[in-house]
Amino acid sequence: MEKVAFIKDASTGVEVVSLEQVNLSYPPHTHTGHYVLGIVTEGSISIRIGDETKTCKEGEYFSIYPDVCHSIEPVSERYSLVTTCIPADGDINRELDIIKKDIIGNPELEISIAEMSQKVNISSYHMIRKFRSENGLTPHKFQMQCRIRKAQELLRDGYKVTEVAQLVGFCDQSHLDRVFKKQVGITPEQYAESAILSKSGE
Image 1 (cartoon, rainbow, N blue to C red):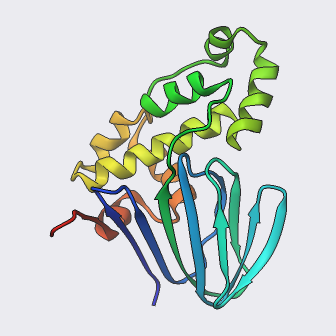
Image 2 (image 1 turned 180 degrees about the vertical axis):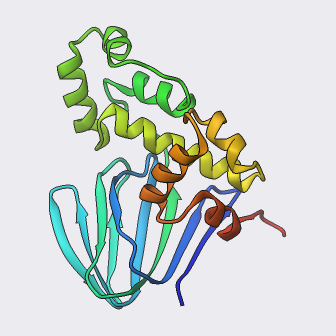
């Protein structure tokens, strides 16, 4: 039976994601400021990390550095997987960090490519290429990812899906639903039911 659970420790920022008997695919994405450690506990997956693709079978581990683009596709009909996202110590200073921090801080805002380029005094073309090189995704895809991450936080805090859609910058709930399911593998409603927020001492 398919089962998905997200468990986050509020005090440390560590998040554990447990997938049981799923056939979910995850498109290219990154984990900003987090290391990811994963183990396949049943079945097998194809995982692309950066420019390398490998198959991970039951009992095999994988690790992903912060800001490295990766994606997952099922190889077996169903698979089970546990990942742990661990906050990284410190940040690597990069040329386009000012844009990255703007997006992370306010993912709901519409920031044009022209505005981003002007902020760092380079052409839009070179800004997009350099941003992707530094962060694994284009600015637009990075912003969509940050919106979904913020949506996850709000859902864990008890906000309704309709409220979340507005707060993170989507035009309506159906738009949030489509992007959320593509990135997370389940709907916002299902995520709200499966997410567990834990605190030290509880």
